[in-house]
Length: 356
Image (tube, rainbow, N blue to C red; front, side):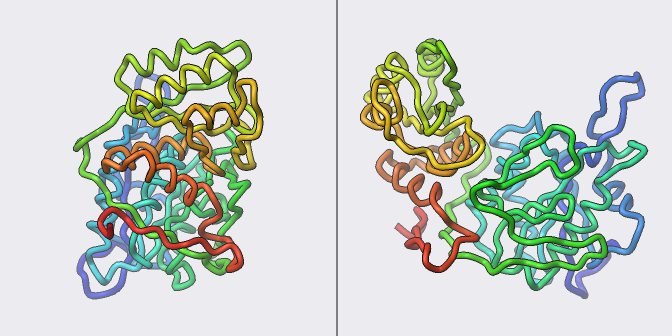
């Protein structure tokens, strides 16, 4: 049911658009985000596991979102959690950049109540929409006592993932997400039964900057066979404060790119090396333009974070005015095992800038 008063505990649904709200345009063109949050919620067609209050935040395909949009979504999460009656928050979101917004939410989340992202692969007017089932299950997860202390989650096709490390792994399949390095957080049945794995150690949250305030350009530059430094130079000339290098293998490039990285870091640009490989850590072991030379040139390893989430973490840290040495420490912490790890892998608690 939709909440009409604050007399009972409830889940907040923040609607931001995406395929779950999309329908074909009247002109016969491609699907566009058009349904309101109330329409999306009504589509589940069965009583929700918990009372729900619906809030419309955006109505966009997630391929259109900016970092400022993502910050605005995270600010609405904080607004929702200011009410002690709220059990948790569900965010309906496009799948294209769900991994980025979910990770920003995880980085800045400092409440034991869960935040659960979900969406759809089939549009709302599809003969077989998957959004209603995903949403019903996400509401069950957000309101479940088992989800408390689990941080930000992504619930899709019955599987629950931690936000850190999650990524879209298939363009069209209904089970569209995976988390090869950090694993799953649990599962939720069609009837709303939630089963969660024990929560791992928690890394302290970072402050959430204001939307648009102190924004810094961060670019993603790929490495590929025969790549030269043209794109890196263009990024520098465009005024980038940070660059995420999508390396090959364990985070490798070539000699020309290494020379450009050295010039970039010497000029104060923060360069982070990630990889295009699906799983495994960035390990700077090779010379002759490889990861070892990138490290010597001043690049920071992303650890287990892939380019999409490396870009979000670097963007947040630069907006917070974090010095390069602290950025390196943060990537070493965040790019290693975190939520979902065993106690033997426990990491030291990181203090946010508010605590420094």
